[in-house]
Image (cartoon, rainbow, N blue to C red):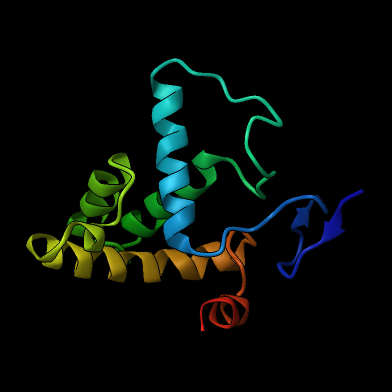
Length: 131
């Protein structure tokens, strides 16, 4: 049975687990997109947990932000570059410091949209689990 989410008109299956952060959702989405582009087929139940979206939903959110000017070309490029390598730039050291700043700024914009859609945990839950 589906239940109403906090977003009007949105239904979420009760077994779905929202991502703890936009970063985790983004890396998962890029990994899923790459898998599909390489000819892989995603089947229900393949993942460790059921997610409230498909990889394309997260990618589409970023694309909409880019088209509306809320993500810059530089920000979307950094998201894809490091997403394809499955690693946030800050994990790679000081040589990636500028990219880490861009990454964090882009993910902040993306987090707002993903939270509204129920794809990531609400901010208060993220702060409690990390704070």
